[in-house]
Image 1 (cartoon, rainbow, N blue to C red):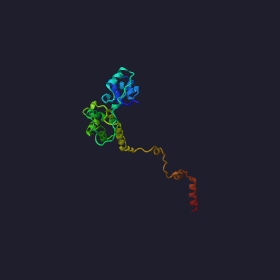
Image 2 (spheres, helix red, strand yellow; image 1 turned 90 degrees about the vertical axis):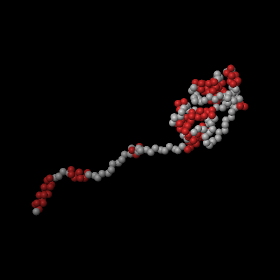
Image 3 (cartoon, rainbow, N blue to C red; image 1 turned 120 degrees about the vertical axis):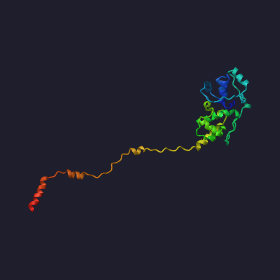
Length: 232
């Protein structure tokens, strides 16, 4: 089985932009779907990914590319003996050393990390892409001297960090991130507001009313008064 080239999507971007190879040939070599390669050519896929030259990395020869361009049926053959091995990713302490040729891409990588992983601390971004706190702050606040030209780019695609290191820092940041505090509600729950309150007991005034409303028997009153006079 033919080996997969290093950074296949970035390699496909370069082949689309710099050769006349067919989509099927590029897809076959990079282990991608032909429609995905077509999407790269149309600008719908791999936006922001910088193409990687497979010739300078020792994965293809110019003669092999020319041969495939002349024959659409020819399948590109990777140079197995010169294939660049993936570096063994290990968490490192302190800022990462960045080659001079890639330092100009660091602000783009910082912008990508700030937008896609806001949970990362400045110290973690410094470890990932080998930058300084002042540079991170200028990118966050859009005060960087080249802010107008910056575009978010994946540091893994740029070769500034490995996917394992990035995943490690993201998991670490997620564990250290405190759980969001529950907002205190100022409203009473519906179960309390919907309870019908029983009216407070009041002293009955019915008896006095009935006494006041009872009609006075005038004849009976005079009869009692007259009887008392006769007895005297």
